[in-house]
Image (cartoon, rainbow, N blue to C red; front, side, top):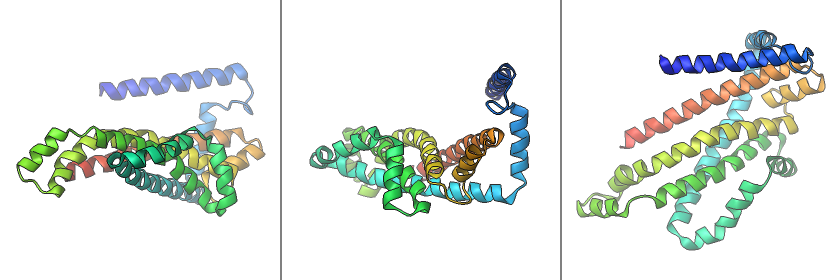
Length: 246
């Protein structure tokens, strides 16, 4: 309850600050009030178009996150086990991490169909984060524990599930904590730059075109809430998967 109270007070503080900025600026087209944004969000919530857009964007972000995670884990296993591959692919990791998201989006527009641009962008943003963290986790596995497992004649499967997975899990969880939010930002940014019907990015793009600031804020709040909920869901599934294999 104490933790919930702290979160509530923190939320009230920032909403109060938002309200203060709204009163100070006194121009709703620049900064709408929290109440007007909340009302608009409530109006969105009863429209099927809103949930269709949310579902479309959620599917794309989740697809990009999944692809980036799988590719990152696969690359981490390869580079952790082979110094040659690590040396070969390390520059690629640094290039992807250093390249602006906008550059990836523009290149994706040239290479892919419109509906696949957000998936590709989210995947490319998640991939190096998972790769770097999981590789670090694999390299941190205590070799003495591996030797002990072999001494007790544990199978390769048992060594993997009981020693390797628990050791890598904290690094994977840390990667997913950052990757989920990054996937949302990259995916929605791709939808804004490359608008596709029935998506959050398309709605944000339209609200910008028509100077509907309240709509822009309402959609932004929706994205933040969805990102937080999605992150908690992903971490919960990862935690359950780890416990199941323990």
